[in-house]
Length: 418
Ligand SMILES: [Zn+2]
Image (spheres, rainbow, N blue to C red):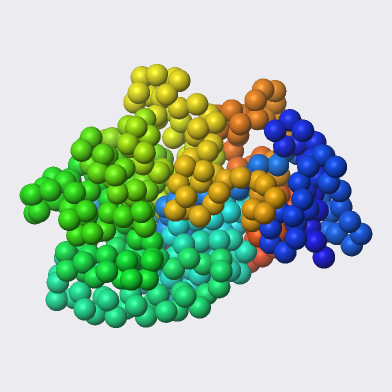
């Protein structure tokens, strides 16, 4: 049975769409359902590409709202790290399933994750029907003596993830330059090159990180990564808020991707914003992320795309600095090929798309893209399709109640809630 969409609006035209296997097989004004198709009547709805969350820690939904408004180190040391030390694979599975429900509900079709028990993350992603790049956080506490054991653990995880199927992209997740020794960063660079694996790392998030890096290595974070051989087109740099102009030029030259997380940066008060206009000047591919639900606290990318556009206008002191169309292109993956989503709906492309309620008050009247960026929340999404599979229809998601109940049970067991 094939999936068919009837009477959807696409760029002002009324079109039909048919899926063959997991790709768009036909699209256009004359395209109609065939006998036996599973038909979605999309009258009153607009067809748009799915969103891609370029940086998150999905299972941190379990710690949503836990220690909000505390200073950063107090929050990490007293709340987050002790809780994470108690996490089981089962907790991570249900925390990730809850995250997937929230992402499906708000139109995210792929995400880049870095979290504990990555095999449980992968299982949750597959069961939910989404796509994800999955990484174990690699941390040796800057202790080179722990580097060899970390490598064994990293390779074991990669082997498990390699068998997880086409919806899972195994990746390397060195947590940050202040938690991973130079020795480990060297073998991570080697492994990435040998196996052509993406490397997902937090970089230049805070001023303190930059100061410590200059003190320890005589280089700013991007230059330090480059010296190690980690600044490549396979690198995904989360944040980059404190890059200086030389670092931007270097990142652009090496072809590394930056994922900016404006809401998390604002909430954790990092004091600077990744400058998109400069990034474009240097040809840096850019994506958008939420970061974890403990520091956002939402996984609804519609909030992040609005903050992204507004912050870029604000720091450029120019409302024309970030048009809605450009912000939407970033949120749908079009400005960062590494993220793995083309952001296009076309014949031959994977059948990853959304139907949004074009008659929702917040999308009325005016330009659809501008309304999606400035006015909408994820609640305008009616239908989410990934690889031709309908994950949400009319707002209903299979397994959502179970995911919610199990995640609450985990949060209670972990002591996050009473
Ligand atoms: Zn993060």
